[in-house]
Amino acid sequence: MSATASHGQIVETAPSASFTWRTEDDTATFARRLAALPALRDAFIELQGDLGAGKTTFVRHLLRALGVQGRIKSPTYAVVEPHATPDGLAVSHFDFYRFNDPREWEDAGFRDLFAAPGLKLAEWPDKAAGLLPVPDLTLHIDWLAQDDQRAVRAQAGTARGALLLQGLREVSP
Image (cartoon, rainbow, N blue to C red; front, top):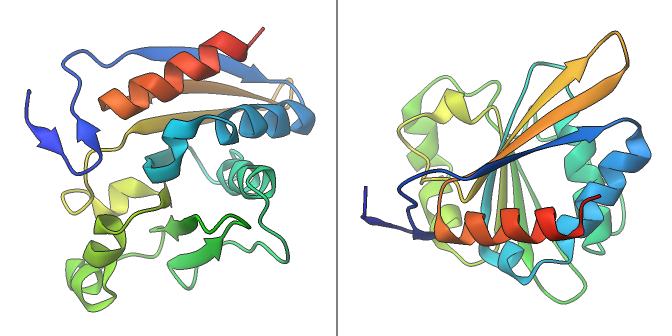
């Protein structure tokens, strides 16, 4: 693969890294680190994991780290929740859990949202498979019930994602 995606050059070999979130404070710290990286501004991040894994919790921490005020709710029923940071960054938080028909994609204007500048975060991206662009970064979040921890595997899908991953590695213990 050497084609160019709408969010950057697709990487041939997908670099990845693993992280452990032992507490919700670890989740918040990870979110703050990611929010501080300049490459995040126009990134598309897929969030994968079972129900209750912590995808929406992570998004809330990331949006708070970006300065979003007010109520941050899950877009499970609305499919997308728009947000704006104090510096004007548009953030679209998608939840495709209840997504059933590809026609919803066109009818809702999602193609335009993904083509516009800004950060895109998508939960349950597999429900919109074939319609989404290549993600810059995919976060696979697994809940470890015995420890109530989260095992997180971050995988870059584009050059922008590789920059994000590199930035996360540089600041992680």
